[in-house]
Length: 251
Image (cartoon, rainbow, N blue to C red; front, side):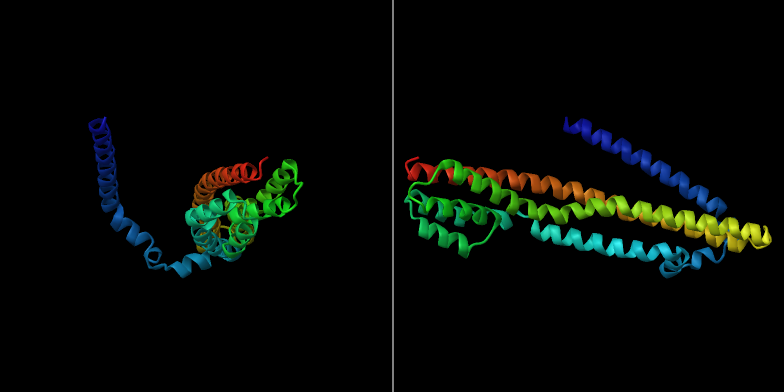
């Protein structure tokens, strides 16, 4: 199986190399002609490209910075250690097995996390001698919904950016094309550089919007899957603690 995969990868790499070689030959053949036709195009800097994109590049720039910020934040926040601390869970489990509610409550307060915060809501119901399992279970459900869903809000912002960025780029495209047709209507085809600038604005904004949306959508699914796995493990830990709590209470 490994040999087949290696052979397949070798074929793909060979095809890519041949395609790249053909492309380079084609570029060499037409390089002199392109240099004569567009000598200024090669001198454009990144700032020139941003400037050519027009007004739409400003909101797209904000979206790109927000994407980087949300990705970095989620890499730091959506981690197993932020939700489940094995040492704390073992200490909490030992206190629950001995029905030491005060100690368990102290552990939860000293080690705040979605799991300990959720479990602490259930402990408040157990303080009453005649507590009902329905009340404890309801407290767990309400607390877990509140604690575990909060982290996903930041993750969902990436999907919003992935949806908005192409639309902003498309709006910039429409704006650029309108300017291009207005230039033709006002001056005809006598000044092609004006038409080229407007078309450049249209193309750059579309490309920029897609360049922002694609990684934003990728990281949205990446963090969503990671979040789902962590939440599933949190539910297992809470279920185990809940069972031990009821067993220790004789329920």
